[in-house]
View (cartoon, rainbow, N blue to C red):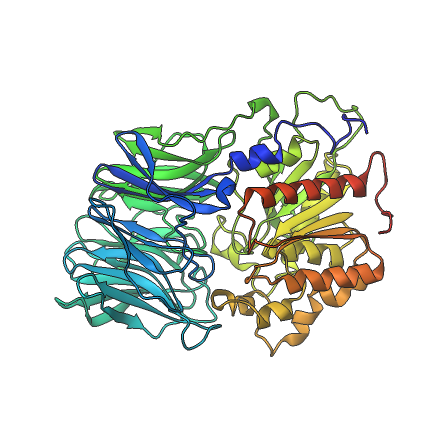
Length: 632
């Protein structure tokens, strides 16, 4: 094989390098002179290590294999809270809350063993209560009851302080400890569709005496309610089409800063944060415009935003303490690291620098393209990039179209070595922010409602049309890949269009009906808004499910599936594999016995990448028209 041939270029971005540099940082928290965060480490079987930084020294608080991770709502998030005296955390292996005493190193369970999951902690220092969101699986393993609890540290007694809604998040106390704020929502809403923001009055024992809905509803999404140091209440709302920050004055909400940008992101996990208070007068924030995240400082009294000059493309996990802010950020050439803002300066906290020479890194080019149904969609194009290779001047690269998960979500534009793995080998990549993606306002986000499997497919195909018309890619070597909900878009695009010559579905969905019948509580009614009410609109589910239209799928597909997946069970992939194999379509099925929804272990990530690359190389081959692929 000619190494100059697109798709076969030798690259320093190996699967081993990718996983070695694949440590993912999350949830920074500062208390006094200590800074904590979580590290998801592929090399340690994906465990979440709790790290402490003090005076420049880094320490793992708990040895391997202890992993700090909650499975609440399956996706988890906000699995610990640090205080000056204690750290409260969820142990992955048993999902109980543990209390770690910093001074003595004593570590003991705080909650009893049982069918419970916990997340989203807040420490009530005045009453010595730990607040948390709890899922109770005792009565119904498929539809656990949700509530907000307060655990008395002295007696270990658990009091339920809010219940009755399908979901809760963000329990926070006012600085004077007299009010409790939280979010709640009900089926069939998802938190980015409609949430209710509650302000409750508390008595001296921490029980609610009265409460009021001050924002939100079925058609307004509230994100990250939070108290300022001077006891003022803030939240993010999309009532203007854009997720902007508001302040509650006791009778009404007033906007803090008006901007055509999103100061929020879909609440897929607990504890997401896009802003915080440096002090009572200043907010450190991040916001998304046209798919790019930026950082800024809001002067509250002047209602003015000052944009910070940075090279960051992705920003998240904002945490503020004592006039300083910590956040995660990535640039086009540097992966996500933990940064600190103080005294008008931004400095790095962690050293997660990539060892890849910048000449190998493809930069994201924002594109907006016309869709086949007369609107427009967005995406990011990456050109093949490798300084060691000089391809033939008349050759065009194969294209990988990437579909992000969710589908309510968005692709990121900071350095992603998984994208560079492909571009450095000679593939072009189109990362699509199809209609339904976030970062472009609620109206764009809502375009996918009742249109999943249609609008996203149109946009993926339209992006290919645009790149072919620009003469940037080989029209005979177009593949599409995606995971989870993105895997459904892959299978739908392969089934209901003739644009693609191959596809890769990573724990993707082939049967919408099966998903509606067999998924976890958080997403149990997600498809009501994306497709329609089930079973009333069963015909639509069947019409849009690739499994029922396999006769229309004519190209090779590779399926990669974790066998412990509860979100998209393996049966989804297996049904598609069996149907395509029976039809004689070339199919590969790669399974991972210890993985669930998403691959966390280094060995799994490496094997998945190698299998997918070998699949494309086999299907496309050198100088080969793939409109008639080789049979299995």
